[in-house]
Image (cartoon, rainbow, N blue to C red):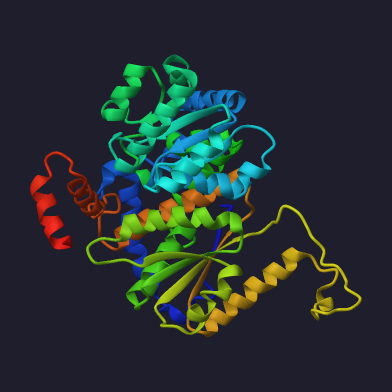
Length: 444
């Protein structure tokens, strides 16, 4: 198993039986995930996905990505939540958060439909207006407000630029296999279609066409990505105390039971930022129900040590940290000697910057443990596609186990509908007239 997990810096905060007392519950959770017998079991299609994915569709994804890379200077990826975060996480972590500035071939990747900011949308429109571009619209229903609005706008622009027939060839729809507004439109217009599987919820969908098409368009090797996920799947399906996903699920549950309320995912690479955003949705939407669960947050160190560091070190003792570490950097930078030594840093001269970063991480970890913050450590070999595929699957599997430890349905999200219903009413959607009057009275 290429993903390593270490609890040694949480040991002072964990009871001696933190793992052994949860073995039966973990085995029960494992069985529910493996055979789909638990609450929400109809949405556990992701569990065996790295082995059982549709090979014919995978080949079509590769072909479509190659076509887009050849005929488009930009790809607008339209989706929200699980239809966007996983793809962006992988593109930035494997490549760079500055991908559009640094890639040497293929299209720039722009993400839209993940909010309702007119300014943000106008900026993307301005960036693509003089380029050849295509759309990948991702929505199971086709009626979610944010991506549906964005698709209306970008589809109209594409048809104005190329005409309806040529635009049709530049729109790729990832949607339900059989039903929904986007499925009906894609069938009618003849867009190339990819499937959001019925048995895979959005936050677990990054290794389906939902994530794989934009990831492949960004030049990431999706064969390697899936191979890493398959390796993790095989390793994590083995029950027992040595299973790192069992250890992670048990440790965070024990710390939650002991009174911790917040889990902070810590990364030391700027490219890790959107992986943290994906992780927050994964755990927040999976566990946050029935008045339960750790609140998922994320930080980027060392930058956030100069902003959030004071609170983490000495604020209310309500948090634990899960640090994600990558063993290998992609290059080296030696710190030069300065004859004047104005900054007093000549003691670092000749040392590699990666060495300095490693010591900063180790020093921070020990300081936070001394300050009362348990630290869990997840280590991946590097930022390559294979390692990232394994890291994705590790967190997905541990998240499913964690949900069953909390005795909730890990695969529904009923609370998400509350804001949508209010928004529909205030926007005047037909059928929401009574709700609209009620809400406007409250807001007046």
